[in-house]
Length: 430
Ligand SMILES: Cc1cc2nc3c(=O)[nH]c(=O)nc-3n(C[C@H](O)[C@H](O)[C@H](O)COP(=O)(O)OP(=O)(O)OC[C@H]3O[C@@H](n4cnc5c(N)ncnc54)[C@H](O)[C@@H]3O)c2cc1C
Image (tube, rainbow, N blue to C red):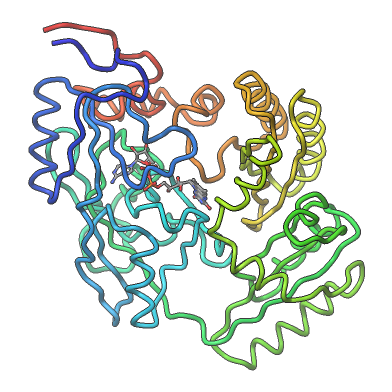
C-alpha cells in the first residue's frame, strides 16, 4: 500500500463522520493496522492549516454533538468533542451558566478543536484559556484504547501529572479527543462597561498593565493602536475598552471608583457605547474581511505573546518590519489577553494578496518575535503555517519520544509538528 502522506496537501482519500466512541476505536484500529494517516477535523476554523489533511482519512467530529451531562451543583458539563462552542454556551445560558470561552470563531469552533489548539477567548483576562476550563478529557488513543485523563470526581488531584495537558494543543497528534468534562460558572449578575482614550498605544498598554494590579480583574481589556482605533471606532486616539463582571453591585461601585482613579491621569473617558459596538460585532469577522477585499487587500492576523518588559519594543519593531514589506497597506494592533507576566499582541495586517508578500510578512514577524523571546503563537496553534517558526519553542525531541510511545504506527496527523515533522514519514509500500 502506498503511504498516503505523499498525496498533495489538502487532499484525502476518504472522509468519515463517526457517531460514537466505538466507531472512533474501530477507525483507530483500522488506521493503525494499515498505516493509514488520520487527520481530525472539528469546525475547520483553524487559521494555520491545522485541519487540512495531507492524504489519508479525515475524521470529521460533527456527529459527536451531544451534551452528555450538566451538573449544576458541581458546576461541570461533559460534552462530546464535536459540539460547537456557541451551541454549548446557549445550552448553559438556559441554566444561567456559562463556559466563558468566546473566541472570535465562537460560531465555528468545536470543543475538540478548541482543546486541541489551546484556544482562548475574548474574556481570557479574567477566566483564562481553555486549559483553565478543562477538568478532564476522554481520548481515543491511536492504538485504539479509550482513556479519561483522570478519574471523575475530585476538583483537583495530585495523583501524577495532569495528562490532559498532553492533548491540550496537540492538534490531534496524540489521539482523538472524543469528550471533555469542563468547568462552568454562573453568569455575572452585574456588568460594568467603560472606555477610555489615550494619546498613544504605549500609554493605553501601560494603563492596562496597571489595571491588573487591582483586586478585581477585567473580563475584557482591549487596548487598540491608533490605526485600529480609527478603523474600529473612528477614534484618532488609542482606545481602551473594559468589561468587568461582578456578583454584587457594591463591589462594582468600589471597582469603578478605583479604575477611574487609576486612569484619571493620562486618559479621558470615552463613550461606553464603543464597548457595545464592539460586543455587537465581535464575532462578525466577515464584514471586516469583505470591506478590505473591496479595497484590494487580504487580511492576516498574527498573535504573539511576550513579557511586559519586551511588549512595546516588540510592537514598534513589528510595525516597522511589517510596514516595510512591499504590498502591506497597514498594520493594526491590539492587546487583548493580559496576564500578570505579559500579554498577547494581536496584529491585523492588510496586504495585497501575493504569496511572496505573505511569506515575507511571516518571516519578519517571526524574527522580531524571536528577538524578544515572544511566542509565535499565543492561541492559533501551529498547523502547517507556523511549523518552521515553532520548532525551537518546545523540546521536540521529547515530544517525538512521547509520540513514538502513544502512536507507534504514526497514524495521527503525520507530517505536522507533533505528528512527526514535515516529510518525516517516508513513502513505503506493503
Ligand atoms: C475568524 C476567526 C477567528 C478566530 N478567533 C480565534 C480566537 O479568538 N481564539 C482562538 O483561540 N482561536 C481563534 N481562531 C482559530 C480557530 O477558531 C481555533 O483554533 C479553534 O479552536 C479551532 O477549532 P475547530 O473546531 O474549528 O478545529 P479545526 O480547525 O477543525 O482543527 C484544529 C486542529 O485541532 C485538531 N482537532 C480538532 N478536533 C479534534 C479532536 N476532537 N481531537 C483531536 N484533535 C482535534 C485538528 O486536527 C487540527 O489540528 C479563529 C479562527 C477564525 C477563522
